Length: 302
Image 1: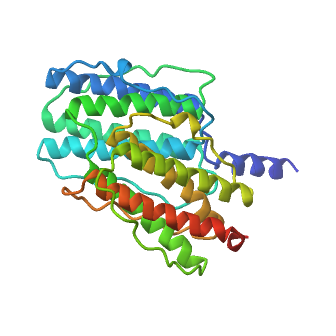
Image 2: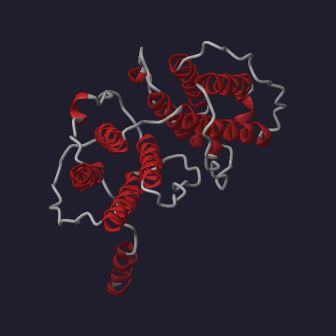
């Protein structure tokens, strides 16, 4: 009996330790502190606190994970600026319930990339004390990562261009096309007419419509949903639209996991330089047609 109990304790000890949002938040603070050295190197001031929009809603770790993807893209922008080769951002297989452990892993990848960059540029890497936080939630981590995202914009002296947003909108197109094909739903959608006066605001509003439809589909099959209404923005930038593409991609992962597409990783974005807000708007509206087709056939998911 004693041997059996010892064996059970040993087996239990082999399991991975669960990481909390508090620990993830601590690592995001470390990222912010690591970037201070980069600010000093470029001689720029960090005035992030004045330009970060605070989101107040209940988010899931999957939404936070997707924002770390955004930071990886901005890290690549910094590498391009300094004539360093880029590293493809990490993507992962779809899961229904992503946990904070995976977000923590992403913070470590980002920190590693910052350390590599500092080493290449001769920027000193200082020891940083890990602060302990309590009662942090995924939305707290999300808002902290949003600060880091704006910090990268300051360092890069630019945010996302329409070309970057187009690449992510294409990833949504790929996911939706794969879902429809897997469910054997005939995709007879065609591109919408180009709106020559389209702005980031038009695309942002279309993205919100897509998220609303995804939410209805998720609810119909018992997938936990997220309320994105607090993300609404009257004057969005291309960077704001980029963030919404990430939220759409994060939510589509749950649908892919639910229908068994657990090994279908969303393809990496193709780097483009020639896209305009009109191109992005047309493609996002085509995605709206695709998700509308899936919404009408939501019974196929069951």
